Every structure is written in structure tokens, then in C-alpha cells.
Length: 96
Image (cartoon, rainbow, N blue to C red; front, side):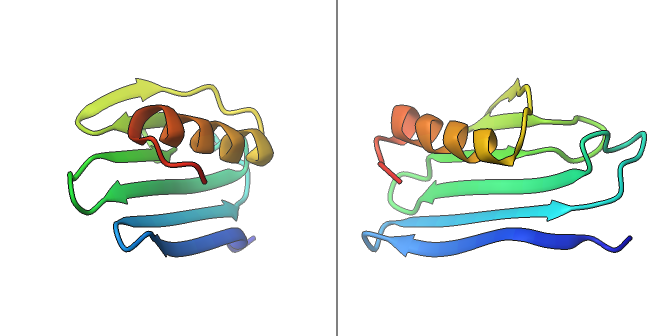
């Protein structure tokens, strides 16, 4: 099974922020037990602050807040997007 793009959004917000969210459905494997590969990012072009959620091997699901990194408990795609929006608002103050 080839990766299938399940969700994609890219936008420039308020001439200050870059937002990109990509979610792919992939074959389940020992490297990707959920069958989902994703990268969601918002960058503030003025301050350089960023929120990034991704799940690349070998780290698995995790969150970057600027230079800090935290593990993330992936549940499903809907919860991922909901959590991303909440974290962006809490960390950068932007409502998506």
C-alpha cells in the first residue's frame, strides 16, 4: 500500500504565521503501529516560535514546542488535530 494523503492544509495566517498539516494513511508496521504518518506545524515568522507534532521513526509520536520535545499519546486523527489546535493556542496564542 502506498501512502495515501488523508488530510492536508497549508495557509499563511495574519501575514505572520505559516501553518501546514499533513496526515497520511500508510501500511501498519512495527515502525508505525497506527498506520498513520503525520506532521503538523505552525511557525511564527516574527518570533520564530513553533509548534510541531510528528511521529517519525524512531521517536514515535511527539511534540516540539520551540526547542523542547515531549512524547505524545496518539489516539486518532481527529484528536490529533484537536490537540494541535489547543497546543498552538496555549503556546503561541493563535486560535486556529
